[in-house]
Structure formats: C-alpha cells, structure tokens
Length: 200
Ligand code: URA
Ligand code: SF4
Image (cartoon, rainbow, N blue to C red; front, side, top):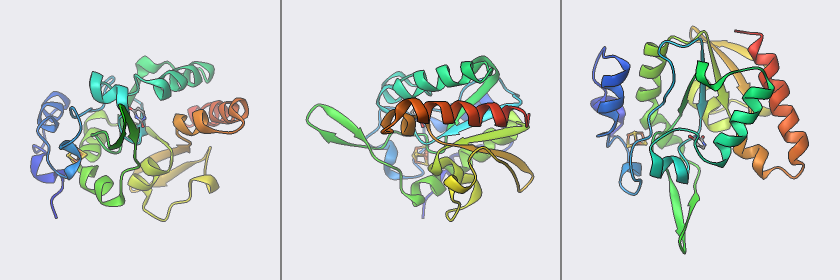
C-alpha cells in the first residue's frame, strides 16, 4: 500500500518538508484537491495543534485554518490566552477530502487508511517543530497520534504521555460550529484550552 513515506525527504528542515509535500501522492486524496496544505507557524514551537484536514477555504488558499473553523479557533485561542502566532498549526491529513453537491464541496471525514498514509508528514513536523505539547483537535487527530481505539470524549482536557510526546486532548472547532448548543460547546473548548495551556 502506498503512503507518504516515499515522498518524505530524510532529515530535512521544515521548508524542504513543505516543498516535498507539494508533490505527495501517498494516497488518492491529492487527485481531487487543489493543493497540499502543509502545517504553518513558528519552528521550533512549544505548542503544536493538529486538526483533521484542510477545509474548502484552506484548499483554495493553501493555508491551514483560514476558513470558518479557523475563525472560531482564533477566537477560542484568544479567550484561552494563547496567541495564534506562537502555535504551529497543522492537520492529520494534508489534502481536502470532499464530495460535490452542486457547486458546493462538502467535507468528508478521511478514512483510517488515509490518516495512516499521511502520518509520515505529521511525524516529520513533530520532529522539526519539537513541541513540548501537541494539542489534538478532534477524534481524527487524536486517533492519528494515539491509535484507532482512542476515545476522545473520555479524555478531553487531559494531557497524556504517549511515545515520548505530551498530547493534550480537545474537540475540533468544527464540532463547536455544528453543536446544538453552540455557546456551551464553545465555552467547553475554551475551558479545555485553558486547562491544557497549564501543561505547557
Ligand atoms: N479544519 C481543520 O481541521 N483544519 C483546517 O485547516 C481547517 C479546518
Ligand atoms: Fe500525501 Fe497526505 Fe495528500 Fe495523501 S493526504 S496525498 S498522504 S499529503
């Protein structure tokens, strides 16, 4: 089975990784997406956050968290006393996965095989960024780092030690946008981020 590993240059810096990721064909998702959306932020950084995959806006603009979920994340970070400028932001999967409905492109959750195929990029980002804390946003990112049986709801707000990494757990900002009680879901995200920030 193909994965990203054959496209990952060995022992290279962030700029070389990002540039190599532009040509990744480690799974089928590059075919329909506009471009690879690699992580961004300071390198090294104390804090890394991992989302799921680029959305519609990220796909066309080529940058992480620039759409509606990103706006919500920015607000939640500010409320938790975290500056986005100090965070290295990335995703478990680097290409947008979607289905077309008329003119709209509807986000589709990546399959486990796609998350696994893309993992070599995330592993390399962690190597060069050297975060002291990695906050996973949502189940897809959590399972990418903690394994497929990880239960997000049982661990949100916690910092776990896993294979030499410190991993903080919370929900994805998109889950807040979809929540029935959005105000409450937002407050819970902010309170998780505040708690996790103490683990820095
Ligand atoms: N959702 C994500 O998980 N990542 C992005 O970059 C945008 C939306
Ligand atoms: Fe490569 Fe990841 Fe894109 Fe698949 S989603 S083609 S593994 S960068």
